[in-house]
Image (tube, rainbow, N blue to C red):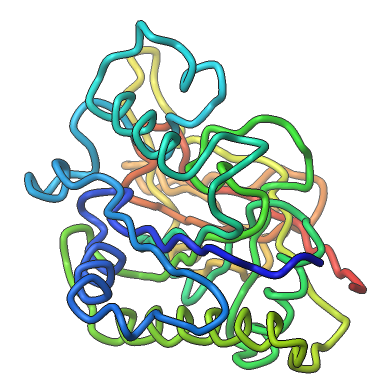
Length: 293
């Protein structure tokens, strides 16, 4: 593998996720913290105007604005569309990025602990995830898939890299423990890159368990689109725990349980994520995918 020459750390992609936003502020104030001898580290504040207003976004979700056709469409003119084009100009273009690896820092209201979300199944991403999981067995690794299909996510600008998702953290709130754990993880990644560039990579366990995305479920809704049930109390906060056919999934407002009707055991993630109500997502579903890397 070619040495890593340039790394981008991005926070504040969503303006009300303060962990990443304030880590970027800290790294910009103390750049020596992320400086390493064998590569350049740049920091980028994803959505500064949304941060200033205490909102996830102004017009649309910035982390859904990076499809190639949208980046090249001159008629898309919302603030986030323009911001995505600026970031694409700085870090892209897709396929030939100006950086070798992207770290995108996020937080979630769901009980996901420390989760690594892979940009792709590039061997380097899998090795990095395996190494970090080895350092902290509580880390989970979630993957949207290994397809080379175009993606709307910011981290898709570079094949190598990942998002760090931590939670539960309320929107617009700084959580000291998750702030510290995210920062520690960033340093572990940078140190790993440094050692790899120096030809002294740490030993890595060859077994990695992915939580592989397989679909999502929306809240029950009426003909007007109004929600008719909540995440069931027995499911709330149970991210990454098995959800079996017949297990409680939703609870209606008149206390009727709606069971999970799937045929196989799955693993729910992003359960009751506050930002996903508008996206029609109550929960993502994943399957366990053991890998030997």
